[in-house]
Length: 217
Image (tube, rainbow, N blue to C red):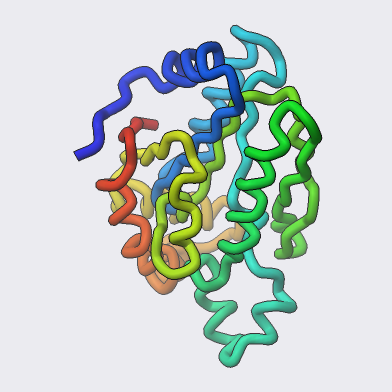
């Protein structure tokens, strides 16, 4: 059973001050659990206390396969319907970039992809990680997935954390997000989540037990 980390900010500051090298944390959690929100809050607090640019949060969304790649699949309709499932991401690209982040520390800046939600495609080098940044957190639903090609992620994070929100709480937040973003009714939002996001939780749950720490939002 992973240990509950009661003060994530203090832990991150301790790592940044004492490691003497670049540290990369992987934060996993269910869709709607609040990974992006809580990690950005940590970043604001840490950078305010120990210096701007000391801590950088990177999202995994840039490793979605492009729409062109989904259309090239054997069943593109299913791929689009299940966008967000593990097979609709690029774990090989993620692994390569994590290795680059490690190798380039203190030497070269590294480009990290973003995701243009209005277009629905990744954007190369949307974020530039400066060589001087010593503490990085990568948040995403599959940072603790180790099946198939995702197994290559093992060992590339110095620590792995799981944002300990339940599936039901996360789905409730996701329903509200869908309604706010797309103008859906509650019924439509639930149907969308049940047909995709809730199914993806089965791939995320095992990571909870394999995390180094559980953190609360």
